[in-house]
Length: 179
Image 1 (cartoon, rainbow, N blue to C red):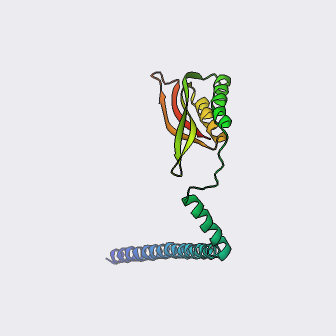
Image 2: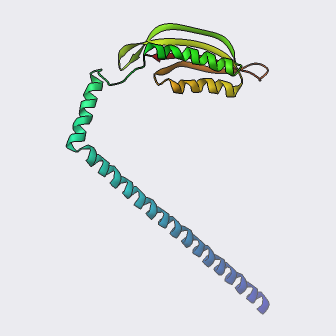
């Protein structure tokens, strides 16, 4: 009977030790979370301070006046956007044709026409390109990267599809290059 009583006490002792260990672990985890929350709070306070500082700088007299003037110009449609000449807009077609030739892409069709596009609620002249290419995915992505060279290019529509065999991609691209 005494052995049975000792076994019960050992079980209770083991349970108490386990409970103490669990409480210690919970305290440690909560302490870490509180410390992390304090760090996050400090970071948030520093960011808020930086934003307030930037806001105060923007509200200074000269910079605010300059920004107000720019806003008025943009609202009046007198933006200082410099558009490229027509010859640069036409150059997109030549560069695309060279890229297609150099990278052995299949040019299914390419149409070019004079067009207009609305910028800042003003109709601007543009050269519209409608292009259909087929080839490998890397080569087609390279063709799309040509758009980076033309800052006034505006993609009107773009679609990619794969052929039934899954080996070739087809790119339908409509771009307007404003001049």
